Image (cartoon, rainbow, N blue to C red; front, side, top):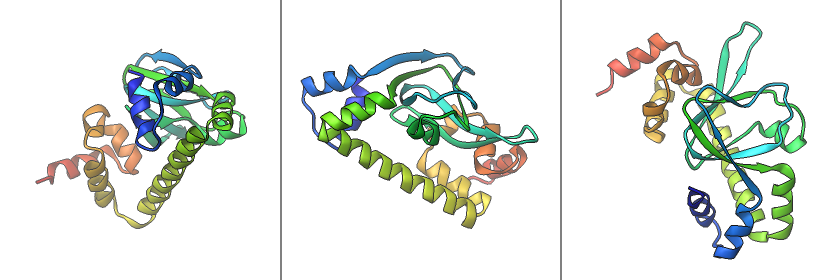
Length: 190
């Protein structure tokens, strides 16, 4: 399974077997059951998580108890509470498993160590962070300038596998619509 991480790294930088083994030695492996938390609001966030298998959701709960999904995470994706991870503070979001999940966990200290020792890895993480920033900006712009149907169509086009893994009520929450509205979108598909 760790080869998934190597493949992702090598989309950006080439590494030797020895380099990969060294990089991998800085991660820990964790298996988590469906509905278990990876991060809970109020807890110290020590790890960034690379998803080997499974599906997760990151969300915030408002004062009325309503969950607002920030992002999903699937195989070959990274997920954490980045504000808390980079500042080594407590989480402001929750992350839990939609299905049984296997993760590679990277502490902030190990990430910093790898980046200080290996220019290739520092370059890799910089590129990944840039890509994440662009995706976040696009998500915000989509929420501000697209209607719900356009957001649904774009999500379906970009991540069709998400619709196979994630319950409809979670997709609806991510899009900021009701489940009934989402059902209407499903019934109008060609």
